[in-house]
Amino acid sequence: EAMGWLKEAELQGLVPPTKDTTGKFYQLCNRAEQLFFPTSYAYLLVPGLLWEMYPGYFKPLADCMIREGCEVAISNVSGTGSVLNNVQSLEKEIQSMNRFHGKKVILIGHSKGGVDAAATLSLKPDVKSMVRGLITVQSPYAGAPLAEEALSDWQLQDVLKGWVENYLRGDWQSVEDLAYSSRKEFIKKHPFPQDVPVVSFHSMTSGISSTMMPLSAYHSRRYSTSTDGLVVPDDAEIPGSLVIRYKEDLAHTNPVWKSVPSIIPREMSSSSSMGEGERARDDSFDSTDMMMTEEERGEE
Image 1 (tube, helix red, strand yellow):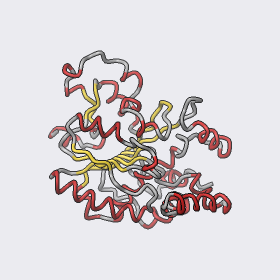
Image 2 (cartoon, one colour):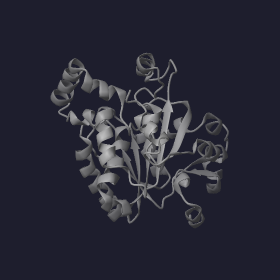
Image 3 (tube, one colour):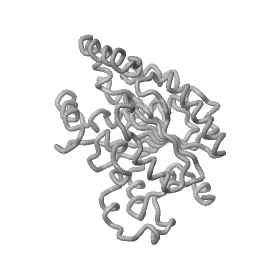
Image 4 (cartoon, helix red, strand yellow):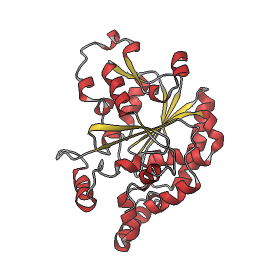
């Protein structure tokens, strides 16, 4: 019953409306010859739950951005840390990057990393002046079904809590923070600031070869809903954000474990035969273009 609660609140006019920019995203991709990250910003990649267990998490994207000449870092937030604890870490990292590079920071948060990053901007208003914007990728901003199940089923909670706290030496609050009940309470008290540009990217998966196929099938059978394996699309949209509803099959893990072209439409990734040296910057996909005003695009 809790799934889609934030989208329902949007339809009732209780929270700022989102704007569907999926079409613009595909137009930008189709006219581009390569991915382009402006070097006028620094980039902080914020990983999600249990990220330390997966070697190479965010590394393909970070490597791509470094080759583009970007100042980029992968956050050291705890993969089993609560939202509030990770907010403290992110505040310091944003301040450090801004001070060291002398540039505004773009936050790119995957899964719970997007929740942590959004919470930082809600709870730490002083860092907003150091941030150009936030991009969330498959983030359960409104909550996640499995986290809610972990709280409502005491037997499941007992097993998972023991695993997180005793084996991983983590904080069970990191899971509780993603439950719908927890997210409702947090968002009500700390809505996302409307003066910070934000893009919400989400996807779905159903392919038999998908790494998240078993979990996707579970959500489909139990809740009659499509997911990326973990996150319901409607629950990944931050109120007031520009939304990209990715059309291709893309599992929850793919954006952080595969190379960047895995999230670029197939027609784009296969259309170019030009060498790296031949590709014109004017024909590149500027990843921040969607959150810029017309005046800012002119300055860029």
